[in-house]
Length: 411
Image 1: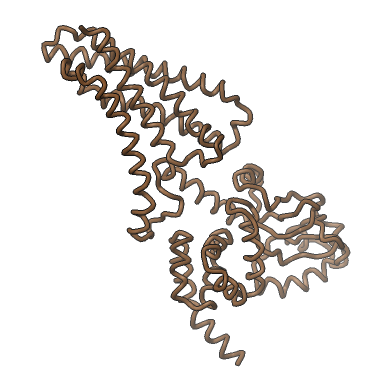
Image 2 (image 1 turned 120 degrees about the vertical axis):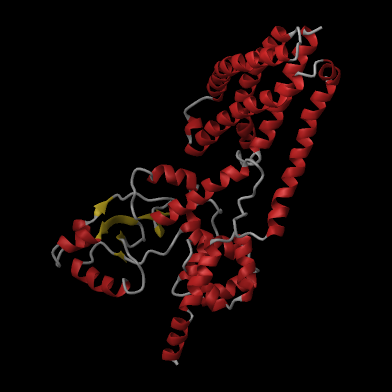
């Protein structure tokens, strides 16, 4: 019976790998839907090959009864690991934890540790040996190199590294990445508030998870949900994106309303219509630059060292400088275009474009800084649909400034 079961597992190995690769390319919701067609045993083996965080995300979206069955069918202690990981927030270190295999007491000799490790490495990949006391508190860590060069009779507490670095399970991934970015260890122990060793996180899993979070930011700014992947079904992609497009349409109506207020000016000075998209595009790009810098500052924790007021003033000043230069070119373009149209007010129109470009670039820099900070203040993801709100602000301000100035100055 045991041989037959082993043969079946070996025969299913290609299916397990194929399913695991398929799940890796899917969102957590789509991955959970995909597992409905597979047995509990195959699902458990495929999930065991994934990043622990992605496996936990998929399991979280399964019905509780199915989830428990997969826990039971999971190889080794993986089911208990998943159950523990699901108790922590999605973007925390706890979601990535694995059970450390090489854990010993300080009084263990090198010979005893090596003998036990010979059996353990047949079942799992071990990078570091963790040393804990009788209360399970982490007191030391050592690499295989120390075991290789130590005397067989030496105790582990004689060769281990004391007071090792560790992560906390509730630590957000962003904060954890800042802590480990200069260390580059293959694995990191995870301890609770009392210093007890409760798990470990592999560096590869940590960086892979953070890369996934970062890759979702660009889409979040235009309303693409983090759940959407290239393999997501078209219907789910439609449902993810359409509400944000409706919101974008409503905000676009605001910009259209601004132009509508000055419809008489546009009818009277038709040449203005050619420069409205130029002004909106330049100020929008200026705002997106400020938005990118602010989001990076939030992600890296730089906002704790730089005051909001200082950042807003900086981005406003950079916007003024950029606006003066690009506005000068745009103003000359307006003057030349109006001259070709035999419009005698070309100089005044050029000055209107210059001033409107300068002011709108400054305003867009301020908006690019404040939009993500306001979203964060209200507890929302600062990257979520930021560009939609930013585009609305820059379009309304740039078009309103140009048309308002033309209305007042060009008689």
